[in-house]
Amino acid sequence: MTPALVEVRDVSRSFHLSGTAVHAVRNVTLDVSEGEFVALRGRSGSGKTTLLNLIAGLDRPDSGSVHLAGEEVSSASEARLTELRRHSVGFVFQSFALLPLFSARENVALALRIAGVHGRAVFQRADEVIDLVGLGSRRDHRPYELSGGEQQRVAIARAIANRPPLLIADEPTGELDSATGAQIFELLQTISAEGTTVIAATHDPLMIEHVERILEMEDGALVGESEGEPDAESEEWARPG
Image 1: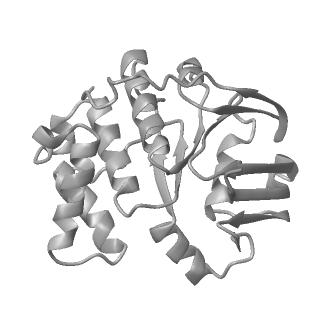
Image 2: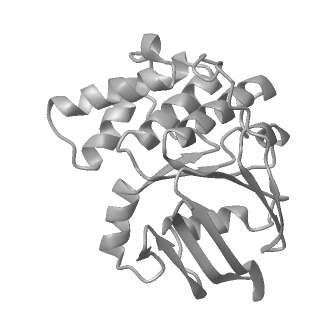
């Protein structure tokens, strides 16, 4: 059996808004294996993003624990969490969050420098991951010269540049049309097949064709689980969109 990279145990998180307690995550327990592609599905406000933030160490639970590769994230120091986010977790969001005056290559290179990579290795690795996401011919273009799908590919390249074992994707196709969204899911599927664990929060029905497991969330709780229908024969993932 493939070992669990992510272990969540009885995790809960509440917020207080205008004097009212909002239970964003309720007693969630789950394991995600190394190299697995898992989707969190649920309506807006169901707790998907909060759970992703807890897994990634961007937030701390009120109770329960989160472990990443055997290390407890939920009780780590802020300094250690910063290191984990730089080296162990990659992030892809609905908004591409690219620096507008930097080329695709420079956006990826900056992430590598922040993670402590120096010298020639920075642009060698940047070029490698830009080629991986199918944008080799567009590496010197700035974000405004790229389509939405191409910008998201740059964001994915930036997220995996430092070879993190875990990739967190929060509504990665929310700003894209269905055809381009399908290409992004195919790309994430390929990244997972190469060994990176991918957890994506989405309501996109296209994901069922690419993920291994779907976890349903409702009112902060996991309420169901089903298998996806990954298409291992897809060869279109590297086409820019």
